[in-house]
Length: 265
Image 1 (cartoon, rainbow, N blue to C red):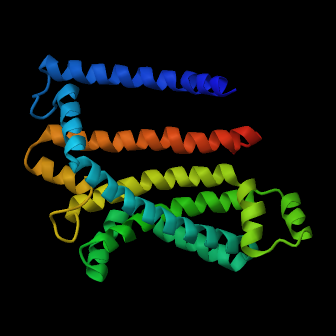
Image 2 (cartoon, rainbow, N blue to C red; image 1 turned 60 degrees about the vertical axis):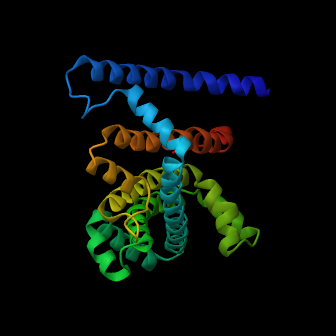
């Protein structure tokens, strides 16, 4: 059984793997073709060497972990807030109207546009970046979760009420499982938006000391010193983290829940 699952996994990943290999080859050939100056567009082989050097020295690892911790903090806080608002909106028209109004106001507003205000209120540091991440993640996540909650069949809600489920228990045992596809979709969007927010905010001012920070700050500094191979290596780290999370977190969770249960949006 394990062999069958493993074979299925490999078959599903094969087209993506082939595409990535072809993309890398195209990158390498383009860099060596002379169309672009290699100082501006370094070959992938040079970028990968810089990436390996950064991993071995620990520089890229530290920067990646720093950014990931900020992202995870922002995701968890945003998820808690979105779940609470969506749950109360499900049972109160008044709360739903307020949530819709807030979403209409803040969702179109780019998180980076709030950065000057965040700096004035919270100073130059992690708190300001966290505020930007929460703002960027909360609203799209809230839309997906609220839509998912409203799509739960009334028979499930009535069944939970019949068994006397209330509050968090009702949310955990009835609402969340029934709206899981929307929940995972919101989490995926939130994950992508969190990366954008963190990188953008870090590129502006990095950490409080100005000498430490995440991948965004690293990208800014390497570009400042015109070390494009190191800049692309940091971008490669972001891509690789994204692929790892997509394959080993989101795909696994979907395969064990949504696909297994025959659920879809």
